Length: 172
Image (cartoon, rainbow, N blue to C red; front, side, top):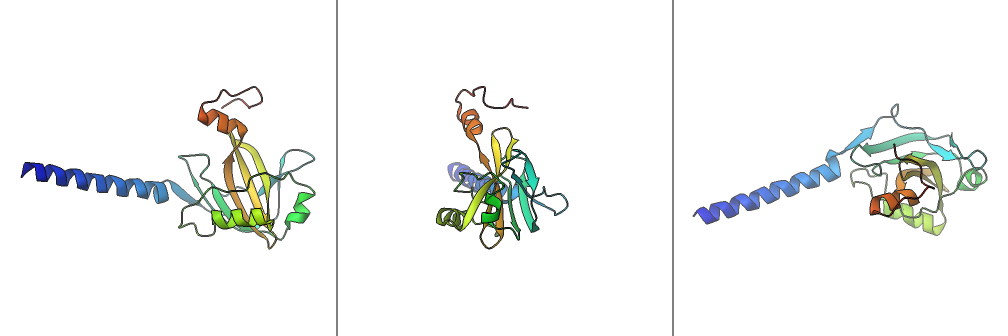
């Protein structure tokens, strides 16, 4: 009898812990960012190497304090990738990180397909927005825009244990 009771307690504890872990990863750490608190949509200028604001509307964003790569956003713009390529720095990013399913405007697989098909272009939004993390902005030919954070070379080295060289900025 005592063995069954202990088994039941272990199984129930595991189920509760699993449900809590799922909730925290999918919902708990994320917060929706209101329009007034959301950062502006910016792209890095080829001329100045500094971020510059572009025109946009209908920005929806989420973020989490638990990780610098959890930021995701969707927006609309009247600018085309062809116009932006003349002025702003392109990014090699071609596969955005997944967003929680409840943040339905951001479909990482569909964005990756558009980037690979050439119907969307990825731009550098800001270099080292957090140590080792760049902000990437992808814009489609029909004016849909997506933002996510991606580890850069310094971030990949720092987080996998490789020695970070002098070319990386100092960590704050």
